[in-house]
Length: 274
Image (tube, rainbow, N blue to C red; front, side, top):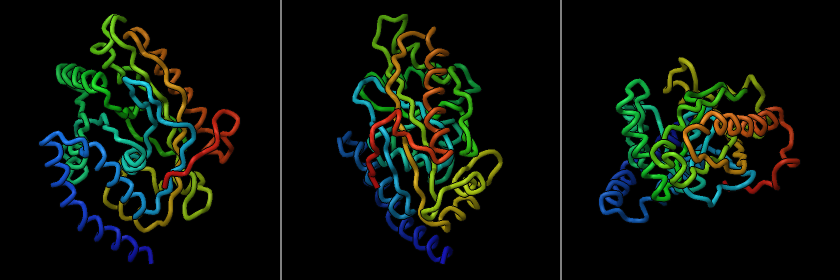
């Protein structure tokens, strides 16, 4: 049954994705407003096909400029986050060269950073600053890599480098850094314990295609996005402080969710989106 499910999902995606990519390419070429909304519809379709149900605690901030600082578990995080609102991602340079995934990332106007080349990083930081100043909401996986889903890794303050370009020495607008905890909580309706999170978590040396195939066969998945209040980042000197505060907020929420405990003491009631 799992194999048939996976084949059906792949068949639908293979049928629908190429024409939608062409439509998105055309929309971007003419700078149509729909280019921001089409990826949201696409990611919602992907989540529906995979049986991914997204629950929100808190909400995406309306403040701008807005940068989401999120923990990273899986390639599936892209569709989970992309299904809630028009977003673009800040990704490592290697992603741009991935078949299909890299193309989709480009069509969502993602930004690719080569962290080993300082000159390239500076150029991308300027582009990030320009996008934030224009009102785009960007997603930063602040750990710098993906985890096993059972913990939150330390946030890297260097990844908040765009503040140099946008805020200068404090004369420009502060960046609103909103911490978001992303936790996969249930598999096939049952609590997802430590031993089950490898079904979703893609990290370390795990090969992408076998992991993708296993996940497509697995069944319904529940995931929670827990939003904290945005933290203003006005100067480069505040990067470590803000990164630490964002890490604390994400870890606080993720720890409760991973343990199967309620967030009701620190957040409003959840709202299901899919």
